[in-house]
Structures are given as structure tokens and as C-alpha cells.
Image (cartoon, rainbow, N blue to C red; front, side):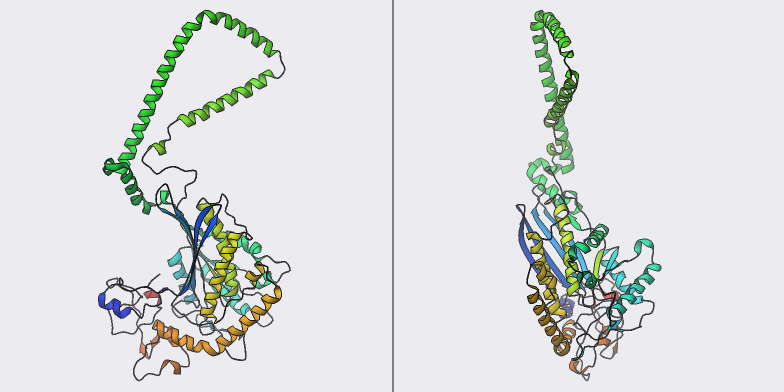
Length: 543
């Protein structure tokens, strides 16, 4: 789904019947930074993978395709690498995945040189929202359940544009949930970003934090804990066998049991021997002290009678007795053999990360899925970042201060991702007023930058996006040149290239992959007598 050179490498893969000699090409964003948190060295990685299905530019690709794919769909993954676990020799890392994508409805906007914000055309091609259901079913297949749909569209406008989409989107989700079981329903959260941002003294991160925590509690994050990961057990056992020498070849489990029993027997024999020695010494000492014992007992009885007459003496004796018992227990704990440490299992430590799985995903959208969406994705990434550090044992709590240096590092990464994705889809950098204000920049400078960004985006959408869209269709194989057919630049629209019905005038037949041929792009590469459109729901390739 995210491999953009699938069409270009198809002849090579069909010839050699393998994907080994082809390098998948991902279109999106990547950044990695080395940071230190309380002396712990971490590697932060931010990945953004753009879907090749229904791909294009801002006003050329809106809403939903006939196969259930949405425009500007991007999968964002945040990975925290804490290095190698010293106890098991396996990597420690945690990851979180979230997605963005256009409103999953049939709608469009006609870009003109005279209107920077054209009207929204809501098309009633799918009255029962069948393709919308296909889109959410694909998300559940890829990420699991539940799907959390966070809608950032405006709730009030003078000229209705986003409000139309907001109402229709809510109606679609309500209809889909009415026909779905309770545990399969979509969690729909409408949140007017502009309304909250325009309030005096608004703190977007603070106001949306409750929603982010709710989403994280619902879906969770992925944590790789080597000690509890079944996939890592063979490597861990091999490492233990190597350290134990030839005896380890008999099997780690038997070795662990044998070593544990041997250590236990050793401790029992040692304790028994110490007890016998202590008993013998006590008998010898008792024989030496018998002549003086009678006089000592009489003296102790007299002292006890005198001490009992002192106020508060009994309470002090009880406190002293409890203190001695506590010391005795601590001494026993220190002297008792640590069962797990004496066995052949990995060394014990104060904290061992436990493997966790992310189930479900947060899907965020605004009208462009660029500016507002990027801010909310940063808020979600910051909330998840605290949980990642806590799960890896770096922090003892799951919260990260938004004004800390590590939070600013993460913010810069999300800001860079937002600019890159906006250039790819919108033709200009993203509106970064939130990030600029967060850094304390002057408001006048922020407003002037936003104005220039709007001008560049308007020019790109009105004059250069058409050629860019043609290049994307040609690169992805959505348009295949044939003899006696109109060239790509003479077509009035590329809509039919994504309908799943026609391609260059020839009927397209969607087939389900049999699995007998190596699959790279989602097409049946063994057949050459059919025309196929990239992006059919039954022919998904790389996930």
C-alpha cells in the first residue's frame, strides 16, 4: 500500500518471480534524532508513509475513491529505541502508529484562479455509505479494532463548507455504527479545532490532552519487552547456552531447573551446617555459663521489676521488639538465595519492560489533513511519548512536560514532517503558527509567514498542480500510454482512472489474489491479458 515503485518494478519482478532484487520506495518523511533523558541515551524516529492509492495533489484528490481509499492518507509511526537490554541482549523499543486521511465521503472542490477557498461539492454517489464502510473495514484489517475517528472540522461557518462535511461524516458514522456490533463500532470524536484555538489564552495541548489520553487508553502502544516476548526467546536461550558452555546444549529449561535445584540444595546444606555448628557452640557456652546463670537470673528479675515501674517502658519495649523483627526479616531476605538469579534465566533488575501490543488506531482529519491535523498528531505523539518512556523504564510516570527540552525536540520533528507532507500534497509549507508561538516567536512574524504560505499554496493549487497530478498518475501506473489514445495532458479529468471501472477505455476486472504468484504491488503479475487499476480493495500489496 505504501510502495510507490510497485508499477515500475513489476516487469522485473514478473521476470525473476521474486522481490529480492527490487528496493521498495516509500514516499513521505523520515527523521531520526539522538537524545538523552536523565542520562539514558535514546533514539527517536519519526516515519510518515504516504499511501499510493488515490494519491495526488490538494484540489485534484479529495475525499473517497470508488475502492474505499481516501486522499492524502499518511501513516505516521513514532519509534523510541532505548538500546540493548543488558539482561537479555535484545533491543528495547516502543512504537506508536496513527493515520491521517481525507474525510471518507464522495466530495470535491474545484480549484480556480479566482477562489482560494472553493465551495465543497458533496456528491450523493453512495447513499448507504458502502465505500465509507469499506474504508473503515480496511483500517480495521490493518490496525485492528477499535478505530477512533477524530474530526477537526469546523462546527460553525458563515459560508457552509466544512460544516457540510462535518454533518455528513457524522451521519455516515452513525449509520455504520447502527449496523455494527457494539465491540466493532467506530469511536467518533468531533472536536472543532478552530473554535478552541481562537479562545483567549487557549492552550491546545492542555485542552485536547484528555482526548489523547482516552485514545491511548483505548488503543495502547507497542512495547518490545524481550523477557516477555515469545519471538525473542530462541535468541535469549541461545545466548544463555553460549554463556553456560557445553552443558547448555542439553536444553535451557533442564539446565535452569538443574541449576536451580543445585543452588537450592547448596543453600540448604550450608544452612544445615551453620545450624549444627551454632547449636554445638551454644551447648559449650551454656555449660561454661551454668554456675553463673542462677545469680544472673535473679539480678535480671530484680531489674525487670524496677524497669516496669518506669512510665512508658512497656511501649518502648514493644517498639524495640518490632524493630528487631523487621531487622531479622531484612537479614533473612539478604541471606536467602535469589531463585531467579541463581538459575540460568536472564539477570533480574529493578524494572523489566513487558511486551504490549497496539490494538486499533487513531484516525485524524481536517479538511486538508495538513495544518490542524499535524498539531493534533503532535499532541498525540507527545502523550504517547510519555507512555513509551514509562514503559521502557526511563521515567517512573507517563507524562512529559510540553515545555521540556525533549518535548521541543519532538515538536521540531513533527513540525518538519508537517512541512514535508504539506509540500507534497498542498504545494507549500504547512501553517505553523502553533509551533512558532510555542517557541515564543513574535506574532507579527508568524502572521506574515502564514500569509506567504497561503499565497504559495494558492498559486501551486491553481497553476502547477495539474502537471504534478499527471506525473503522479504516470509514475504510479494509473495511466498507461497506449497507441491511438489521447495523451495524458489532453484529458479533462483523471477521475475515471480511480473508479475501478475503466482504464484507457478498456474494462478492468478485479480479481482476488490466489497467492501462487509473488505479490509486490497487489496485481496478479502472472497475467498480461487484463488491464488493472492500482488500488482495488481486493488487490492490496505492501501493507
